Image (cartoon, rainbow, N blue to C red; front, side, top):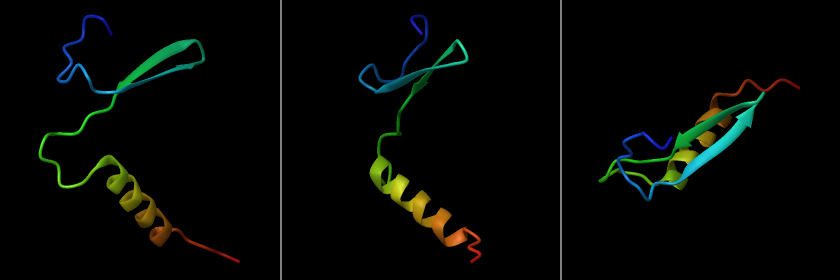
Length: 56
């Protein structure tokens, strides 16, 4: 990750090790986005619930 050109040095990252391989994910949103990260997650969850096939 040291040699990557990051668009925003203050952008948060998530690092996870899966099966011995380390993965680094940069979390970023474009400036001027219509929705915040929290709003986006809520919208995605709402959509998943609405599209879920529920059988009893």
